[in-house]
Structures are given as structure tokens and as C-alpha cells.
Image (cartoon, rainbow, N blue to C red):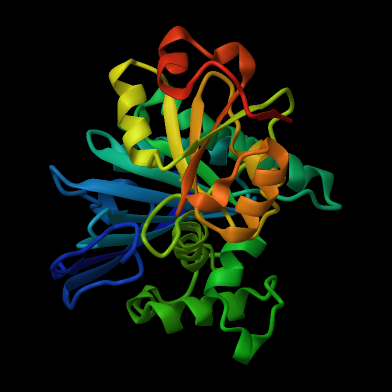
Length: 338
């Protein structure tokens, strides 16, 4: 093998009444932990538990990749680093990294797969390798059974770091790798047992930050998913359904085999930015709205008296996706277009 590996495995006591999308940062008392290093998976002896649902996150660089795997109920966690030797080509490293990921995860169920979105740098070769690594990660759900039903997402460094960084001590210099490590140790003291990183970038620690930052930015305090993602390029039709909960509409659409998703409004983006970020091709997107400022803006846009209702659901679709079943539930006309 042309790589080095390091792994920290920790078992935690299960927390009572644990809610995965609300209590994602909470871990129980430590039952046991093991730190191992080696040249291949056999030496690390990484064995995920049967009948356990996992989440996985990645922080990748050109020579070192951090992997964080945790049980969805926070009863178990792995911090892993995969570091390439100096004489290894990037292509060989990517092949071996993919082989290792599959070797660890094969036969298990992963609910969420999150990675740090690479940024362009002045070094063309480094940027090329990072985007090739991203491409490899994006192909995992297509190549391997363990990721077939996995929710797949990415997050920028500034987004996850804004949730994890100890800004009082280190400021907002999110490129400071040691500050990132110490901030993560502050939030999750058990990570300090991982010790020194195999590379200079503390990727094992940052993989923890990627996952925890994603949970923090992707869900509201009640565990409901925020509107996130890239802006949709195309026509968007919007229907306002006062008094109907998004969860009820979601179930009705599912009964009719209509592809649907539900979100809550993200206060970090503007009203119409939320709409174009939520819109998806071939999918009805339901957004819960109870904010008075949004009610005012959409009352003007739609000419409806929305202040008479405590909340409403905004149904967002691409016009060519309005099937007969969707029209029966949502109505036949849009209240406004974008």
C-alpha cells in the first residue's frame, strides 16, 4: 500500500430521548476507545456494527483525507485519516482512498454523506486533484450499494467553520488549521485522543467539523431541514396553501406517488432566494412559512390576505411538473411565478 492510516474508535452510552437532527452534538459517557495506525485496513481492524445506521463526512486535501463516521444515534464514532506517501501519484491515491472507503463501509447503511466543497486555488494542479476527489465522492452513491439510499450533500469551509470555530479565542481566520483543531476539541473533548494528524492540515479533526457544521446549518432548532442548495435556473411556479401543514401535504403527495420534499424557510437568505434555492426539477417542494415579514412580502406578491393565518405552506414546482395528482392536492393555478 502507498498510504498511511490512522483511526480512533469510540463507543458511547446511548442517550435517552435522543433526537438525531436536534441533539447531533450530544454524546453520552465513553464506554471504550481504541487508537490504531497502520499501512492497510487489516492493521486498523475497522469493523462497523451490524444493524446500525451511520452518517459519514469527508475533509479532503491533495495528500491527506479526513473521514468521520458516527452512528446516527451518536452511540459510536470513528475518526480516520488516510495519508498518501510522498512518492504516490494523485491517481493512485484516489484509487486507494475509494477502495478504503468501500472496504470500511461495505454491508452497512449510511443515511447522510457530507463533504467539504473544494475551492479553486492559484495552484492549478492542486485544484484539479481536489475536484477529482470531489468527483470520486459524488460517484460513491452510484457505485456502491451501501450508499444507494444515502442523502448526499456538501458544505463550504466558511459555513461549517462559522458553527464550530471558537471565535472569541481565535477570531474568524477559518484557514487556521490549528485553531480549527482546538475549536473542535473544545466542542468534542474526546477528539483529542486522536492526537497528531498524519498530515499538516488536521483533516481528521476537520472531518468532524464538516459533519457537525452541516447538521448545524442544514436544520433548524426543531430538527427541520432548512432550504439550502444552489439557485434553480428556470421558471418556478408558487402556490400558497394557508392553514395546511407541509408535513400533511407531503404525506398526501406521497400517497399519490408524487415526488416531494419539505423544508423550512432559511432566515439567512432572502425570500425569493429561498424560493429559487428550494426549487427542483421533477419535484414538489413544500416550505413552511410563519414569519410576518415573509407573509407581508408574499401577500403583496400573491394578492392574498395571509395575515389571517398563523402559518402557510408554499408549494414550489417547475410548471411542467404539475401532474394531475399534484393538481388535485395543490390546485390548478399558481399564485405567482418567478
